[in-house]
Image 1 (cartoon, rainbow, N blue to C red):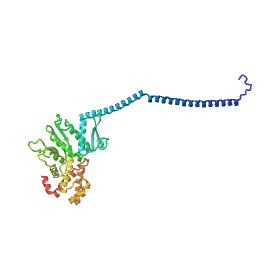
Image 2: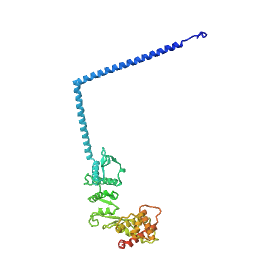
Image 3: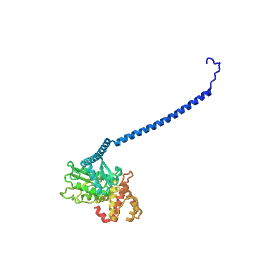
Image 4: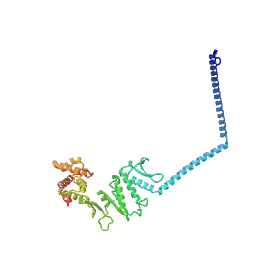
Length: 382
């Protein structure tokens, strides 16, 4: 650097040669190192195998270790037996707790009833005896309320109500604090397969001694079945029968002195309504009440006059025309209006109610019965 003017020569080829020789030496050293490591690992593994084998032989040949191992096996088997016995005892405890529980009593009560009336459901309780579980008889899978029919829901609700009236699981002793029982329409909301059983439950309630019981129904058949043999009109009878009737647009509770079908009372209602003058005002109550009454009269009269069930829809018009030989266009038109009044206005409330259509339909219905069954007409209107 101090003598920059002098030329200095450097043998780069020699440097490269030396560098290459160094790299070759390093590579050879590494290779030899790896070989030595592999050899050492092999020896180490062999030594470990020999040591383990030696220890294993010592263990196998050691009598004290054999004895200890046998003790462990015996204790493990004993522990397994005690664990199984403990599970059995716990299950017995749970079963005893459930037997003392009102939930399991009710579950057994309902399951037996469901089996008796051929419903493929059963009721169980959860492990805490606090909740009911609905299951199918054929699958051990919990069901939700959406998985069962409306009739089955109503049945379960009514059975729970009935069960809760009693102190004992056999339904023999009613709770002393219960003085009044009211059951609203228990039968007609059930599936057909359940009705007879529920009817018998209601009869059991009516036979209770110290409670006042009201059973309400809008079904005439249910009313007759519940009151059969009760002789409610006799002087010293502990039973009474009542009917809600409408007179002049007002509802009233009437005590029945005999089993008189409501048909006659309803017939007279429509007969008297049909005799009104057209100019007389029709109340809102009559507008919503009379279509339903007309439907009931028409269906019941048709069933015993013609001997067939009748569903008052517009597609039945041709059938009615043939049954009563209403071949005049004017009568066909009046029949169509009557069907509309009975079918639509008896099931819904609309804003387009024509009181004159209701009045004219009542007159047509009375005339239809009079023309086809005068003896019946004369007896009913009195």
